[in-house]
Length: 423
Image 1 (cartoon, rainbow, N blue to C red):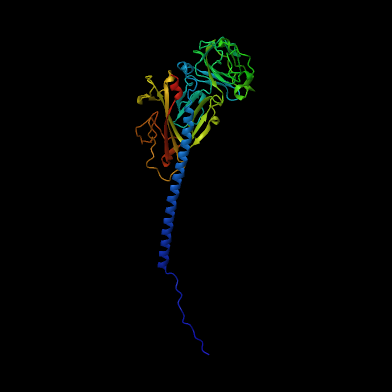
Image 2 (tube, rainbow, N blue to C red; image 1 turned 180 degrees about the vertical axis):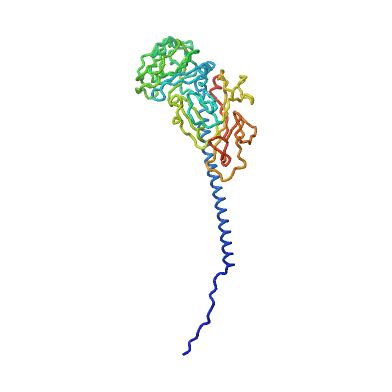
């Protein structure tokens, strides 16, 4: 039997040339894919980072803007005696539940105040402010009833009361309360040549007619004329009008006795509504502190409001010629020393930074972004001293890599309606 044999076939593999061509095609494909992925990732980082900067800057701007809108609220009557007097001298307070005895230094008690971060005031002097940024402070009353004009008080017996409230309206107040004062109000007594002093009302007697519900706080039946009114500010327990007349312990009536024998009394309102806030940039974050409630000389007291904020610059809109308008030449960083009723507006700029550091230098990055307060381009980031109102990014917080980030500039002007109303 004969067997048929199939013819032998040669088994061929890939040639060297074919392998090299395949490898080249694979490498090109990998490079293209990696480039596409890199571009996509860069776009994603830029988009998400820009969104983060947009969000952080918007939150920061809104936080500051809302506080500034209350500057001077309820404290602007009588040609702003409260600010014109208390600004030029110290202001004393005591909060035993917070920082204890408080001394606000000369030239600090104003509706709005600007300091350079390099020279913070004593009551806000905590280490860690970012260089070439501003520290700002806003003060505004929290009373829903007080109209802003000071009440004459005198011949007080320290530390219990302010008697002899002058019936400033010149009428028999058979239905007026004493300027809408309530137990629980913070009040400030203004005395030229003596420190101004903040305390808390703990009782109201002989005050004319009580407002609805005030008698329920344990006050005696009032007289029909307010000239013999007595405003108590004793330490210890009292019935708080703002807490349904529940008994509380005042934390504001310690500290030094009042000086002098007479002064003007203003209501700052409910402590929970009274505004005294400071804002500053610390470690690339917008932070805030309340000097009457916190010890702002300690870094831990500064609360973070928004991350990724690298600059804050501000200016006063001061109506120097008293024409009720802020002209182009009336925007200034020079702090007013009197006539605080002429402070009509504030303008500010915030700069938010993208958290994502780019691989390469951003060619359009400028260490001095333009804003209304400084419109001269300056791209020299060699570390020279910036102008006072220049936004300067090449600071210690950014280091040598400042120009590998993207920035978003937020600018606004805030009208101080309370200061307009003062006239």
